[in-house]
Length: 348
Image (cartoon, rainbow, N blue to C red; front, side):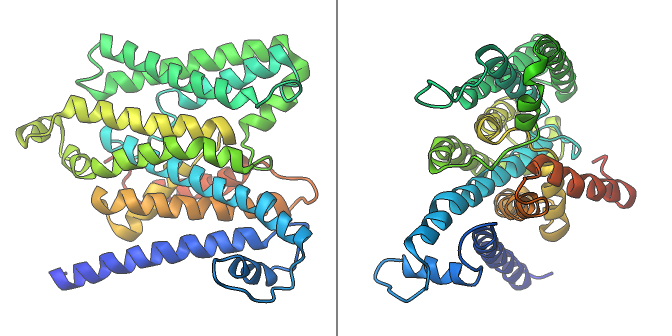
């Protein structure tokens, strides 16, 4: 492939990813058990653009459903999917292991424990609180879990080798999961509420949730994007990267902190949604190659598309009830990952 063909392919992927995100948002906003017919939603969105006025045939009540119920859910799904995907790709880069995800160092286990403690100790935490404290506590516990994992790994040389850090993560996840199980056994009346949170929830999404996570996700994505070239060099190994001038320990620490910060933020508002950070980077590698210069921006785009579309069957297949988004991503992600294991070498 010559330089001209390479440039055309890169621009084609960029344009395709932007179009895919726009279509996913439009489809997600058009589907729902209540509200106007799907074909009126694009007209309503156009009608509310500045300096444009058309007759969309959508009433104020129907527009409120679109803008205040559907759109926050779609936008939050896109943000969560983008962050989990780019976080997974970044973790796979710094640990040189394509089988890890952004929950590796305990972010999910910490968030789950924090949410469980809040629900078990304070019961119906939505009553009497100016804001829902569960996301805040889940966020703090997620960050705390990863910090403890890093401290344990660093004390045994985990900053120089990834294997010790991974093992510290496995141990921390097991410990936090054991504590969570103990709390649930002592408070069996909240098991259903806790598991509804653990399996992922977008049904309660509001614009406040979007505003809450955007700063963290924005900072994380910018940092990861700026380190995409260093991630490419880390693929050849720590010693080789050092000879090429890459401060391996510092880069690994910065990438892990950024990916963890964004992951903790989205998990705090969406619950634990599996397989997104594991599967989407592999799909992008099949389409755009393994270079992190393309992988980072493409995983952001296609991660958003994946979760927006995955949320649609969750809110339509069992309507008026809802299927947790984590169940949908597992149904889609697990068979695909098994397929990858059978057809591709995921050991490197």
